Image (cartoon, rainbow, N blue to C red):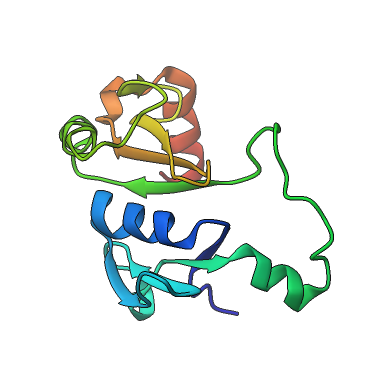
Length: 150
C-alpha cells in the first residue's frame, strides 16, 4: 500500500479551495473553483500531492450513506499536521492572510516542538509546527528519544 494523499470531505468546496490555495498557498495540482475535487501539493509530498478536497455529498452517495447527518459538536478525530521552518513567521504570514488561530505559538517541550493551531472553513483542525532544539525538550521526551533512537 502507498499513501497518496489525505482527502477532506467538504460541504463548501469553493470556500475550502480558496482557503488551501490562496490563504495557505498550497499549489493546486488538479481542480478549480466550482469543481467537485481538487488536489494540492504540500512541501515535498510524493507523487506531487498531499491533500485533496472532495464534495462530501458525492462521497456519501458513493458509499450509500447520503441520508446520514454530518458530525458536529464533537472532538476532533483527525488533524492535519504541517511542518514549517519557523512557526512564528508562518503564524504572522497566515494571520496577515486572514487565518484565525485557536492559540498562539507555544513551545510544547513534551512534544519536542513549537506549535500553533487553526481550523479550515469546514472546521478541520490544522497544526503547524517546527522542531525545538533537543536541549529544550523535557527530560521524559529526551529519554524516549534515546530509547527509540530519535
